[in-house]
Length: 143
Image 1 (cartoon, rainbow, N blue to C red):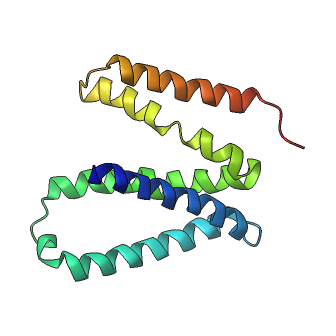
Image 2 (image 1 turned 90 degrees about the vertical axis):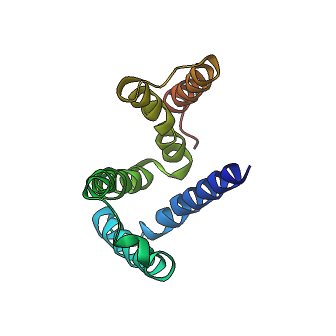
Image 3 (image 1 turned 30 degrees about the vertical axis):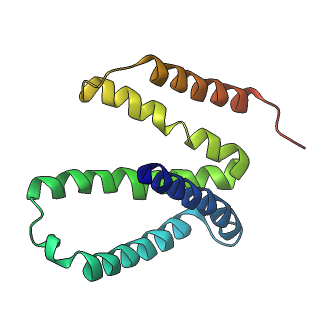
C-alpha cells in the first residue's frame, strides 16, 4: 500500500511540475527552462544523497552506474525537454495526458526486452490509455 501512496505522490509532483513549467515558460525558452530545472534537480538529489545515503555511494557497481546513466539521458534531458516543449506549444491540459502514455511504451518494452507477461488487465488498461490519447488528439481544441 505504501508503494501506491508513493506513486500517487510522484503523480502529484509531475502534475504540479507541468503547471509550474507552463507559467515559467511564458518568461523564458524551453532550453533555458530545461537547463535550470536539471541543475536544480541535480543539486537537490546530490544534497539528499549526501545526507541520507553517502555510505551506499561507495558501493555502487559500474554496471548500475551505466544503466542509471542511460536512464538519466532519457528521462531528464530528453524527456523533460520534450515535456516542456509540448507544454509550451499545446498547453498543460493537452500535453500532460499525451505524455502520460508512457505506460504504453513501458509495457511494450517490458514485454519485448524483459519477457514480462501481457495479462488481460494490463492489455485493457493499455487500450484505455490509447483510447484516451486518440480522443485528445482528434478532439477539437477548446476555444
